[in-house]
Image (cartoon, rainbow, N blue to C red; front, side):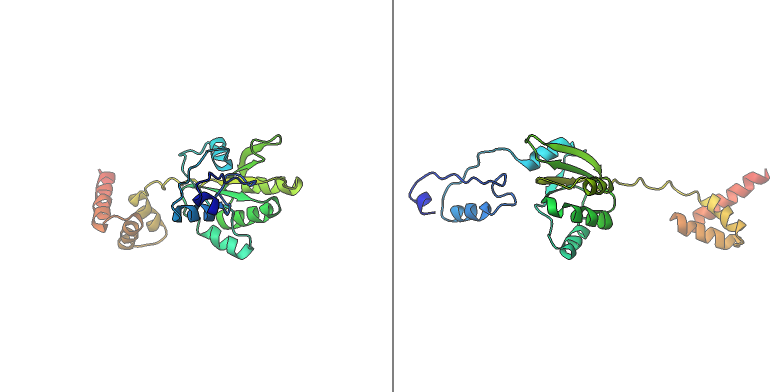
Length: 211
């Protein structure tokens, strides 16, 4: 800070990727701003943006969450908070913790699609999409090496169930031994429509069937 305050130009570099992304350099930048020092960014290689580009996310939306918690209990609690997340979640992870993370992801969030990128921009780059269960089987056979960038895709939205036919439900309930009054009431409740509407349609059905 003394050199910065003296008017020198200082560059912040790191051997762990982009400074301040899962890197303690953010503390230095905050301190510099507090001291009135102008801070600029010279863009460079980024594992996050490279992985997101390769993953070809359907809507392009994602959130970067750094490294997941290391301890199993904390990690599982953290994963539970992501159950309703509609964006892709990007993580960094070390190879010796990867299998534990994959196990917890599958148990807590289900067998989601996971994009795994390893050694990006290097000679042994690997990047592809598979289910969490497939990745677990892969890395149990081939122990993970290198630094990983992971992108967990959100749970696919399930299409709404087709609307239930209240009259078909009335017939089903009558066949089960319900009275007509009970069948009409239960069908209306199950379909979320007024009982009088179900009754009117049922009367019309019976009238049509007798003609």
